[in-house]
Length: 191
Image: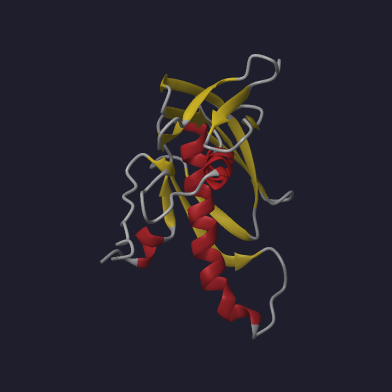
């Protein structure tokens, strides 16, 4: 079991620098891929020698007795947000999708000049998806798609939008699936 000191502390990677302004309540992380800022509600303690960042339980604003109970959850949320920002600035986030079904295909849109994808998903029409700025996609085959970028929320959100165009159905398993997703098939009617 981790102690409280370790639970609310975050190690800063070697290739990442962290800037903290207590007056503006702002934490800025500069990594090899990106630069991101995070607005804070709790004060931080930074140990530059050990490259450790600790989230304190002292808020920037005055707190009533009823709101003090929520500080522990706010402290844990702040730690997870800081970890997410550190990951987004130093690594590339990837989401893989696969199309399962007869005639389901993906390819890049030729008519649109923007970064867009075209899908054949069994509808009477083609389905178009425009990628968010800062995201890229690659098709390894006509049924496999990879979306990557530096923002975790944007990558997972565009993958969820694409998946919602044809969610996997429970009888044949046809649809857009995440790479490691397993569909539990239901048994059909017996005659």
